[in-house]
Structure formats: C-alpha cells, structure tokens
Length: 149
Image (cartoon, rainbow, N blue to C red; front, side):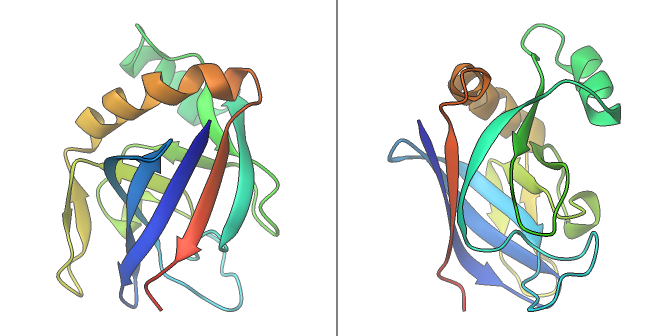
C-alpha cells in the first residue's frame, strides 16, 4: 500500500499537501517548512520514500489509545528519515502542532502566513483505518514529493 504526499504550496512556516492513498485523494496534509539544514521541530520531512510502521510506545500512543480506543493499534511511524526521529502521522491544525510530523485535515487554508488544515480528527478517523493493516504488516510506504518549490 502506498501513501503519496503531494506538496503544492508552502510559506516561511508551513507546507500544505494533498494526501493520496493508493491513487485516491483522501485528505490534506500539513508540515513545517522546507529548510536545507534541519532545525529540530521546525523542518519538514525531506522529499523521498519511507516505510511506515506502528509505534506502540510514547506519549502520543498512550493519548491516542484513549482518544481513539475503538481503532487505535499504534501510531503511524514514518521510518528511516535522515536526521529525524519518531516522525508520526497525527491530528493537528497548524505548524505549531507538527514538530516535523505530518498532520492530516479534511480542508486546507492556503493563505500565506495563515496556513492550516481543518477537521483534522475527521481526516484522521478516515485515514487511519485505511492504512493501519498495511502498517502493521510492514507493507506501507509514504512518498513525499516537492511540487511547491
């Protein structure tokens, strides 16, 4: 199974993308801005393809196990990103919520200086069940493509 993240607009703080699962548009994504040199918690994931598995430890996992008790089996963990650790796919609306992770939302505000995603919880509830089995079986990849620069 494959997730494609098509980055189509960014500003000095935020990147907005289309999130596509096996060829079907599902939701929007939000990340931090592009930087040539990584700044911890302030830099988006480098373009490329990575494995996605489940992470079953840490604070996010504990919170999501309660918040999404009927469906949560672990955090979607983007693996082997150079110079990054514990990059997750989760809920949130602005670059202040991401710290290098990918946030999902049903709608996107692309106004420079005010970029955000909206209805993040709804998007997550739609997205997570579609990919969790593949992540659990280590059969899920994610490709980030820079079409915003």
